[in-house]
Amino acid sequence: MPEPFEDATVDILGELQRIKQSTYSSDFELHQDVSRTVNRLEDGHAGYTNYCYDGLYITFLPFPLVVLAQPGNEDVQNIHIAPKASKIVMAAPARFQRDPITPQTHRIHRPAVFNSVEDNSNLDATLLEPLFPVGNVSGTGDMNWFVLGDGKTAVLRLGSFQGNLSALQQNVLDGIDAVKSAGASKLLIDVTNNGGGFVCLASWLHRVLAGPEPGIDLQPGMNSSVRAQQLPKKIVETVVGLNSTDLSGFMYSPSTWKDLNNKTFPPDYNWLSPSVEVQVNGVADAFSQRMGDDCLPFDLIPPKARPFEFENIAIMSNGRCGSSCSLFSILMHVRYKVKMVVVGGKPGTTQQYCGIVGGQALKFADINSELKSFDLTNDALAPPDFYTNSEQGIVLRLAYSPSDPSTFEEFKSHPAQYTFPLLPSTVNNLTALWEDAAGRLWST
Image 1 (cartoon, rainbow, N blue to C red):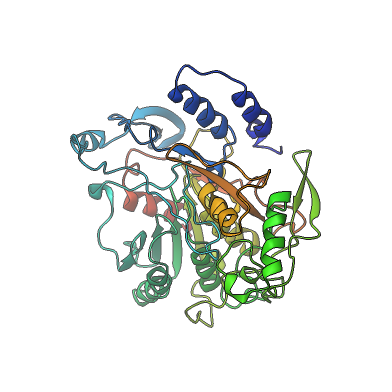
Image 2 (cartoon, rainbow, N blue to C red):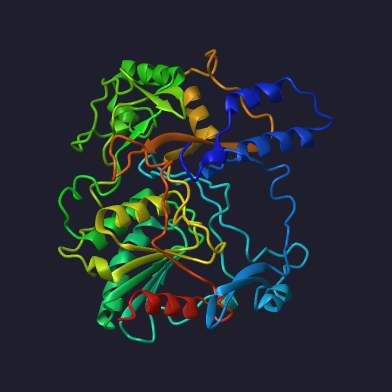
């Protein structure tokens, strides 16, 4: 694996065979082994959850630790108890009360939702209400627009790419109109703790901010390939044999997918055969041909011009930006050199502005549903049902890199251009953090 992923390589098939041959004193001990093994993949899309145990307890850290720089001498950074920790302690949930900082949960949506999955890396987080800024000029769900005190800098606080897709797409336009009407000429996009969601929202936001760039109206996202092992090939062969146009809602139906020219595959087209042999981490694997966009046409008409110059756009995160958030951030940086900022982190360490990328992730239940729909549950390659209330994430396809279309983006390094320290005045104070970042980025 390339840097910085050297420690993320796991022989998962070998580990599962080890688990199969092991003896455990309890079901919980088995669960712990499976969970720790899957977590070593360091891929939130491939997360394993057993709801009999996971979520049964909440660990509440009343005095969170944070690395803060010394004002006036930012080279000196020390570990502190986070300021305002007392307010968090006072807001601690009582028995049976809803946890106010429980990470949000993703759910599967239609096939065009490229990366809408439950991300077991718990990237999304909800701020306590007293810590969230007031005075947004537009917003819906996890999308909120602000204008800073300088009157020139707009902030898009994007907590996730989840929610009501239609409302979020409309609010991209409404929010831009609102901040532009207020006189903003710069845009800071805050995606800290954004675990992703609708890839079509990521594609839409990319299209609106980029404007009518060449090729963007053919592919506003990233091309991708689906994994093409023997069991998926059997599903596709079964679907193709039916030659029906009524199966477009199924994941392996040809009618669900488009080629690189944005043309939907015909219902009798076996799009997984022949497969393309590739080497992933030195292991032979098989993928489909390249797939094109699955979000077009958009429900709304995008603007004819980009609203901000690229040099006046910056994306800020704390490195906890994954899935659709990664796709959006990578596209904006690679194609248009938009500034990438990470706040906080270990001093002297190269900070990654995003995490997992993926392409499309599903749950075991989605694959199992396809197997049952096409009467393949008794196939020798079909996985057994869960006997527990569990979920397993599965990475269905991977996106190709916009910087090198011959490779997948998943395992590339994404170093931030700028790393700004947290200060006592900016930690847990979003408005102060935005103003500090904007001042450092656009001080001239």
